[in-house]
Amino acid sequence: MAVHEFAMMPHEPQKGVRFDLYEPQKYACIAVPDDAIEGILPKLAEIEFYHHVVDEPKKGLAYCGITLIPPTSERSFIEAIGNSAELDKLRTLLETAVMFDKWVIHFGI
Image 1: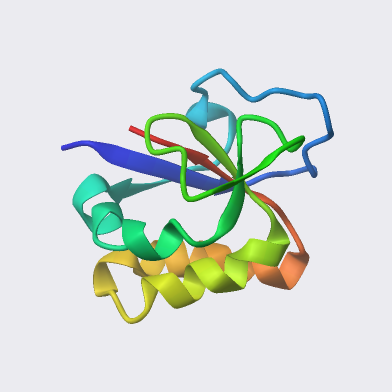
Image 2 (image 1 turned 30 degrees about the vertical axis):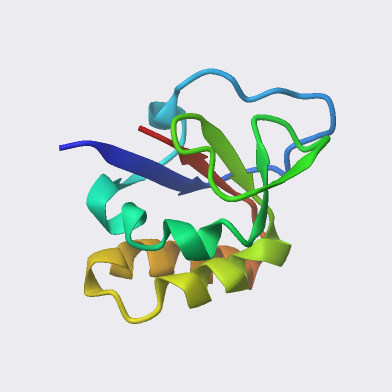
């Protein structure tokens, strides 16, 4: 089964620094089934994220790439999740990131 992986970043990403390597083991990632993410993709397509670098905002997840999720977008992401039990761990991760004003990294499939 294909999965997306998410984790809180220990440090805020800096301008000009690219995240191109698939290295979820570097972060304490949680795995989220692809079919659960597919169900909320239309809602996520309206939220500003960053793909691979924080120099240019993009809408939606980098489905097959790396997404950097800023604290300013995390509440909207939580709203997109709604009450999905399948996304409870992701919701908890995002809520924790909001509390600590941390960025979240997403490794797509």
